[in-house]
Length: 494
Ligand code: GLU
Image (cartoon, rainbow, N blue to C red):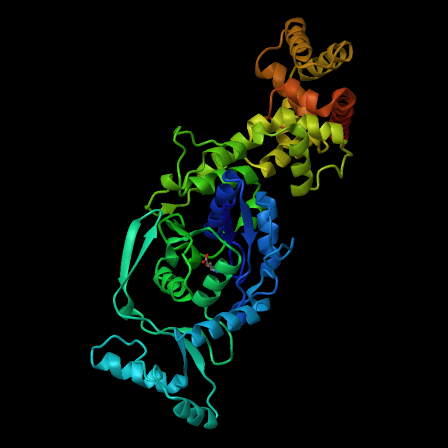
């Protein structure tokens, strides 16, 4: 049997991390089993659908690297993959249940139902449907239709316990009386959520329903539907909830919880996948940093716990740093291009971008931080800031800058070791050490007082730019030195 999992979001807004975690687990398990991962949009709730939400879901899944085997965008044999396009299938399924007496037409109007519900509650009874239309005769039905009532379709629910197995929580049981005869098709022909899900999961031959524990209350109704239809339910795997930091429900929290926010803030997508999987599951090895290959290999539904998990963006950030450093620099360079406008001023070549990514990755955790590090090195040095000027105007600073320029100019190969050794020789020759040696060179190269090791800066900048900047700094200092002296004279003369 081929394992088939599905991710079935309702396109009502940005994909938040809780739903993304559901997608991650379904995708990992399908890959682990060499099965199929299906995307289905549950868009029957038309009032709540947000136009751009479908596109955001697709963009989020693409960024996370969760490729679909079937779905509205890629097609497949079990389509269509939007519930709004599957109306005929729900009507057919309802028709079959009606034919077999497992469902019946209900002609009660919403206001009648509401009045009876209120009365039941006032009497302290369960406000479920009272079964009034359960056993209507053909004549009674004809009469109600003649009144202009269009019926909904309800499932005939027998009293007694509904038992089902959840892979995470074991056997669960709920009494059928608690929800009564529920609606499958509304009077306008639209399916209810539970009915559409079951019809789709059956027709799409879904073998494992992996979803948030919030859906546990729907499962008994779905189990009853499988029974009424006469088919075995899939395996149910209800994963614990993802909570916002502080323990609030994620859906109640505004902002900064959508997948695309984390992309824009520079998190590495592999880290997000890795982190989200850990919110439900743990590797037997105890390792937390897990590559995608390892996740696929090790994912195990029996290791999913029951405890709800709070988001910890700091931990995700730490994982981001690890995944970022594990990535080939060419791919990192692609990500740099995506996050920033690097390469505008001055022109940065592809090769320089790749080399920079390789050299600077160890200093950062986020792709945006990498872009900033790069930007701080490549942008024209800000030697006019008071800090840089103070450094470059110290006694001996210019001599150090000039000597470094000469020493580096003579290097056979532009390598970290040679640059480092030459810099140390400059220190010996000029008598400068520590900050008196490093700070003038750094201020000359970037205009800053702090940053990566100088050989790293020189490697990122490359030979030509480095030597130009050292020369420019020396020339600038000289000009401004004369200028200041001249002004001084002018003052005295005046
Ligand atoms: N459409 C449902 C949701 O967005 C998921 C249904 C399911 O996984 O069974 O939460």
